[in-house]
Length: 175
Image (cartoon, rainbow, N blue to C red):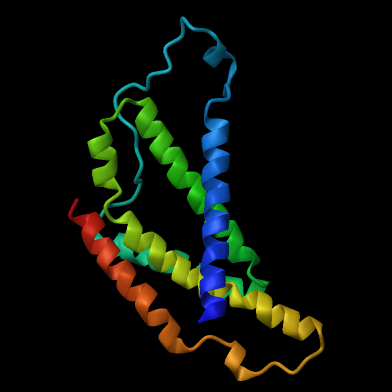
């Protein structure tokens, strides 16, 4: 349990690195037109966030794919894939929020759109606690020690994050 809490904190740290990198780079000029105050940077009609159909099944399956990649990919890569996905996820979420703010979208609409985020983020962090175990496994292998089954995650470790993703998809679909 102590190791799981530590790995969740590691996941939060990588997620924050991504979010901060987006936020810190957001005010930097992107192109020469951004330096010209006479140029309008307002987008035209609409922004496309979802290119596929926004329904329960697509949302759940996409999030499950990400969760399984974080956990299984992390196990097989010594936690590297988990770290990369957390940095990327934090970066993308921060970009979306920054873009909504720059479009002068009301904060109430931004917060409403993020209602599903707590359960989704907690779920992904739980998947990450499984994936970051790959670091412990890799360390054991590199030391030449015998790999014991207790280092491998139990199938029941996947139950709670999957349930949270189901709830998150229900919330997101009904926004």
